[in-house]
Length: 71
Image (cartoon, rainbow, N blue to C red; front, top):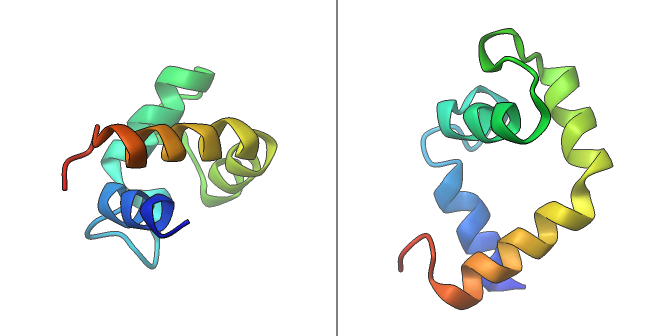
């Protein structure tokens, strides 16, 4: 569980209290969903993460175990 949180915090670095503004996370949502990153709103971002939470948790577990984000 701590590995997942560590990866999530690393991915949102610099945007921890407003992670929906992170250019990296906005880009990832755009490539996954097709919603243009520049027009992505907080509401859309939160809806996307809620709808795809199982996939996102699976990715965070993979990244924590594989060290895909670095340690």
